[in-house]
Length: 295
Image 1 (cartoon, helix red, strand yellow):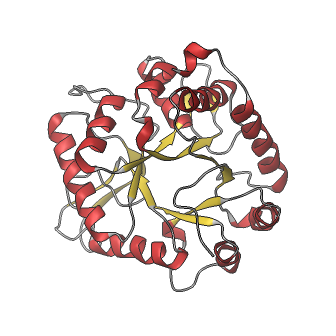
Image 2 (cartoon, one colour; image 1 turned 120 degrees about the vertical axis):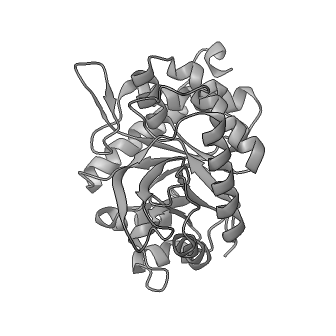
């Protein structure tokens, strides 16, 4: 079975409660790729449903959440080996992770010793020094992986006082220095822009879109105090779906192929909820925006 070199079309992240639904969509030709949280899968004992999708020609992307690429220490070889083994087990065209730090370690070996685990993806300071650390860690990961690495922007509800770069400039510099790809999460972009008080559409159009391997979108909640929480547990809100529409228009305006766009959901993962959200995602992809917004 020849697999596509890059994700395309619309997709849904694999979660066990909707495995049968995704299998049915794949059989009907309505699902060309999916994604699985790498830490939840043993490369030597793949879930049968996921293996069946792989064997049917669906691209399965391992998506890490604990590598901590923006942390002070190099990514641990054992975590990298796990990602590499999953890439080979799924015959994946790439693996993905986050531009985030997740722990502080008091010993050189964060798998053994005193470690403070954040339990969350935290944003690095966007400074020249922080960028240097991130570049070194991404290059180390790239050297250890058998396939390309794509890194994702996270939802950040705060910025560091020492920040000297905004997120589009920070990630553009990372791409230029490492050649890595991006997973552009438009819900995370919206959350971060709302928290910072910037224009999410303007931020979106400054991202290095030519480097995007695929796109994430998820649901969340708009709070009365103005913050947007990326919960992965609620329906997608209109501004986030609007960013999907704008993103598609931007690619078409620039003559670039539209990357795959994938729905994530981690709570209330039922066939009914996923089907409803998938319909909303497809409608946003098919919608049109004024030409100037697609530039």
